[in-house]
Structures are given as C-alpha cells and as structure tokens.
Amino acid sequence: MRKLILSMFMSLDGYIEGPDGFVQPAWSDEVAREWSGWAGENGGHLLYGRVNFEFNRGFWTSDEARDLPEREFMNSLSKSVASRTLTGDLGWNGRAVADVAAEVARLKAEDGKAILSFGGAALAHSLIAQDLADEYRVMVGPVLLGGGKRLFPEGVHRDLRLVESRRLDVGSLILRYERA
Image 1: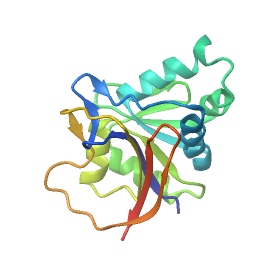
Image 2 (image 1 turned 180 degrees about the vertical axis):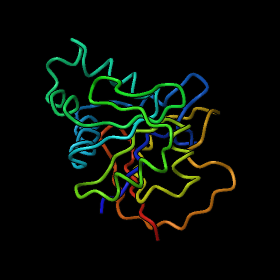
Image 3 (image 1 turned 90 degrees about the vertical axis):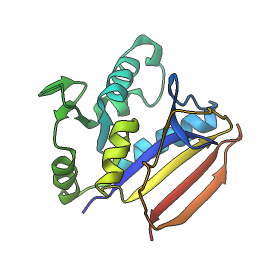
C-alpha cells in the first residue's frame, strides 16, 4: 500500500501562498537536488492542483527545461490533477479528477512507491481536511510573506512526529513529519 506525501514550500511565517501567489523559495543546486529527489523517490505518480499542474507542465515541456537532468523523469511520471473544471486527459501524462478522496484511495491501494503531492493551497487544504496525507515534507524558506494562505487550515488538529530536519545551503530548512 502506498502512502501520500504532501510536499510544500513554506515561508517562515507559515504561508504556502503569499498575497501574490506561490512561495518562491531561495534556489540553489542543493535545493534543486532536494526537490528532484522528492519527486524521484515517489517513482511513479504525482498529485497536483490544477494551477500547479499547468505551471509545471508548461515549464517541464519548455525549451527552458531542455537541459535539466530531471526533465525526462518529470515528463514520464503519471499525474492526477484535482480539478472541478477540467476533465479527462490533460496531456503530460495528466488526468483530471474531481473526487480527490476517491483518487487517493485508488492510488493508495496500488503497489508502488509513495504518491507525491505538489499541491497548491486548495489541494493541500482538501487533503489535510480529509486526513489523506501520511507524511508532510515542508521546505521552510528564509522569507516572511506577512499574509496569504497557510498550510494548515484553521481548526485542524493532527498529532505528528518529526522524522527529519536539516538545513540547506540557502538557509532553508527541510522538515519531514509523519503521523504520530
């Protein structure tokens, strides 16, 4: 049985989306290797929110990503895309799903490595509210946004256990939590 790993960039003041959109992490070769490793270890399936899927599809299929070593791998993975407006095959090995809980249950029942979600706030909140995430991987960046959307919706309580914490070269922290 697979597990679902929710992976997010987050500001030091707890926001995964700022007033102007996603958190832009301090980037370095080490950060790129870390993020690619998260995708690589899942080995077969990504779960995206619609906006994040469209952004990543545009990037990984572009000339800008042509020489990146992760390109072939990212383009080969199967992807589920949580969407209330899109349907069917979305290209880039993506398939729209309206019922996220049913899709996660189906994917978890399969054999294989973990399902990795590079959410967006709406998808992350849905996964958390339905208690579908088995692990949280958060890259906390050295930035304060002062507002936006937080990782955990108001009123959510989860007992978690820290399984890893470490510092990256740009001052970001990697925090991994599993269910307690």
